[in-house]
Image (cartoon, rainbow, N blue to C red):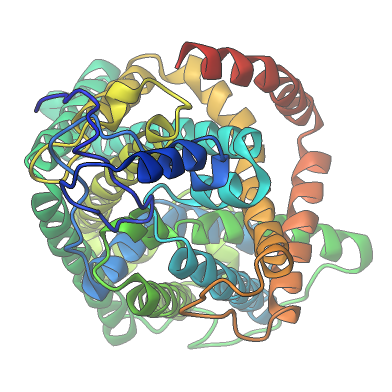
Length: 485
């Protein structure tokens, strides 16, 4: 890895991945580049490394990163809470369908942005391009820190379950050590390049999908004592209690579906973004919806909904019914396997967000350095280091993540707004894919996100105040970072 000095013979004239090559600049062209650099939306990235992001990814990787990033501990935790809030089979399944439709509506709109603006960095790229640098700053930093925190949280699940499988390792210190080691190992594996990172993602996501298919099949083959197999009388809550239960359940479901936009973090590295990003988004979202519905159907086939309600890990209880004394071991092993693809995906995504912000001058330009394998090495190192800090200081940093969770859906709101802004501001801009059903589908996704955010604020008003304070502080920090960078 090396950091090259800026030179007029090594300028990337197109911020969307088209390189002009090593041609000397004429005075007129040099003036044009200078002008473009002064416009935030068209700013020309400053090359600081001999390497660059590589266009080597396709639909297969897009599917893998969506499945790997989305399907994790949430599908094991959420069913118990949802069954407690809506103890009716059809309402229970209905909220999973509605959550899937929200993700699908979101995919329709974000696919347009990902194909139209093929730059790596996720929703930060869309917010900055459509709404300006400050909006991009808020989206980028909240997304990066949340991704690092999620890496830590997933790694800690791996550590905790590994300790449970091997009692000799018992202790919080052992769990944290395992978690930190796993996070570091995946960062080291990605260091060599995107080909390594994408191959690991493909393999771990495939293993995850196969493991879930095996668990679902076993439940239907060996189960048969649950609410679907022997339906009984299940009364739904009434009036206000029912409405509250549905709202809380939808919040849990939407959090569980989060990750469906994973491929847009790599738009610049996809060989044919105009074609492959929409295909990966739709294929990935539909795959996740299918797996989630089948998992919940399997749970209802094995367990009565009253038994699912309140369980921290309903799938673990179902595994004990299906596999007997081996159920807990099988469940924990499946969970660890599921988490590995999530850790790899989160490292890849966090790295791209910090890389994109650094390239645009919202962090040190050193973090935009890319090695010959296509890995932003400084950004990867910093992302892994922050994740390890989250692991070491878990409880303290949990509060930070809780506050930043309010930005999670706010980022989607800004992305959907960006679709409207760019349709109006740049109607003639080439769009390899145009959002199906626009403006209605985008409007529905936007309304759903606003309602979700309002519900989250109502449920947790204390942390929502902290989030507003953080937002107020973010502007002077933005000005300071711009000056320092």
